[in-house]
Each structure stands twice: as structure tokens, then as C-alpha cells.
Image 1 (cartoon, rainbow, N blue to C red):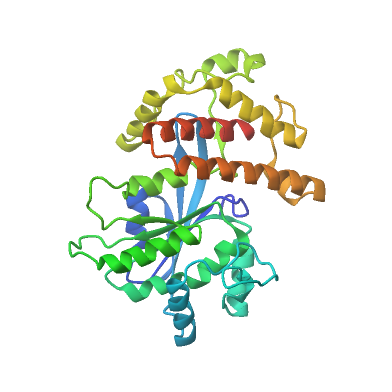
Image 2: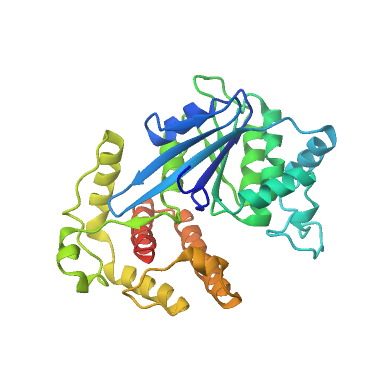
Amino acid sequence: MDNTMEKNKILVLGRAEVDKASFVNLITGSSAESTSSEESSQIKWHISTRYFNAAVEFWTDSTEELSPPDAEFMSKWLAVPSQYDDQDNDDSGSDGDKPASSIPVDSAMATLQEHLSEVVDAIVFVFDPFAPASFLDILPWARMAKVYEPEVLLCVAWNAGREVQVDSEKKDMWFEWCVSNGWEWVDLTDNDPETDYTADRVREALINNQWSTMVMKQSQEEIEEPEKKDDVSDTSDIARPDGAREQAEWDEFDKVAPTIDHARVNDIHRSLLAETGTSAGEALDFGTLANGSNGQSDEFSAIVSRIRAMRIEISQMTDQNEARKRAAEMAMVLARLGK
């Protein structure tokens, strides 16, 4: 399969009863190209925004019911959500400072997660809130999230076609656990128009990630005058994409574009390049940085930390218009880094 070793995989996990292929189609808006077995599938998705393209893959697989001891462990974690450190350190302290290594998984799962961490940069855990015990299945993937820190962590409550309300106390408990452990909670069973719980929110979170396959689109002006590539370009010459959903997203970018602070985009871009000693005319090779010498790895970690902090800041904004503007600016910066 193309790009097998690229870190551009989206792991979609849920019980066998959860129709994960339909969920992926809900997010992508189309029947994407897939290869399937009885329990798992690989689904290619081509992300195309006004500013960049990125080839990614959904890897879907089914979770299994936990053993009684592990189910009890996860139930206790739900009761006290803030118990574990991020990353796999061995420094245990207070009850809120336990190492991620103490989260129980067997050796086969630990080995699998180690390999997956090399190519997976997003985990989407999908569960049926009308089968509340299935939420406990998140346990091993919560461990992977803390040890390997993929950029996107989404916990999605979803059951197509069900109208019955779920116990609000359970929802509050799941929400609190997610917030305490770095997962974004998206309740697709919530029909409240005041909330942002929609399939488009899942799609937006995935599109806004810094994928290793991200390629910046060039306008005709940039092609003709490459010496100006250090400036934020006018992308009005880029062809509109096909598909109603993609065109709607394009139009959203059009609404935001006039308000973008181009100077801020340039400043952020230059400051990130400066951390690696890369000039404005060069593209960053993230694979080399991540797997190179200690110095290069430190530079990569610094960039990732900066990007993560920017994403957190955007996610916490109460002004949705300002958040969209900042997200568009960030997308432009990320795309330009990999030119």
C-alpha cells in the first residue's frame, strides 16, 4: 500500500457492532477507497483544502470487551479521571501522578502499540452510548495516547438512527474523563443546536492536523514569481475542488481569508524555521528531524510542542470566528513548513 510508513494514519476503533465504515463515510462525505477484511479495513482519504493537500488513511479495527480485572481498573479510572501522567515515565508520586506504564495491557498489545505509534497520528474511539459498558474498551488506547502522544485524540459517542436520550450523568462522567486525559469529546447523539457536536467537528479536527504528507498548494502567482514564496500567497488562482462538502469548506476559507493576519503567519513560519536552522526557501523534512541525531530530535520536539500549544489555544477560544481565523492561519503555516 502507498505511504505505508508515513505517519498519516487515523486509527478508528470500536466494537464490532459499531459500523465504522459508515462512520468514516460520514466524516469524509463519500464512499472512500478501501481494502477490508472481516474485522478491519484501510480507507484512503485525500484531504484537499484551499491551502494544502494531504493523503491520509483510516485504519479501522474492532475492540474487544475487557477482562473483568481490566474493566474494574477502567471503572476506577472513570471515577477518578486525573490519575495518570502523559508519557511513559517511571516517577510515581501522588494519586494524580501515576506513570502511564501502570495502565494494564498485555505484552502483545504493548508491542502492537509501539509499532502503530510510528505511523498513527490520530486515534478516533467510537462507542455506542446506549451500550455504556463499551466505553471501557478505550482503556488500552488511553494507554497508547499517554505513552506515544498522537496529535489527535477523539472520543465519539455515536449510534446512527437512535433517538433515545442517554443518562446525562454517564455523559458527564465520560466528558470529564476525556477532558482530564487529553481526548476531545464529540457526542453525535446530542441534538442540541447550541453545541458543536457534529460530524464536521470530527472532520475539522482531522483536517487541521499537521500530516506528514501535507503539501502546500501553489497559486499561479507563486509559480511565476517563486522569489516571493516567503510571503503568504493569494490562492485565488487555485482551482475549486469537486464535491459539495469540499466546496462548502472552501467557501468557509473564503470568508475567513480577508481577516487573516498575514504578518502573524509569516512571523510564526519564520520562528518555527529558525528553531531548526532552516532558511525560508527550504522545506522541512519532518521524518529526518524526528529520526535524526539527538539535536535534530530536540528540534522536532520543540516544533511539535509549539504546534500543540497553538492547537490547544485555538480549541479553548470562545469566539468561534476568531478560532476559525486562527485555525486557517495555522493551516497555512503548517502547509508552508512542508513545501
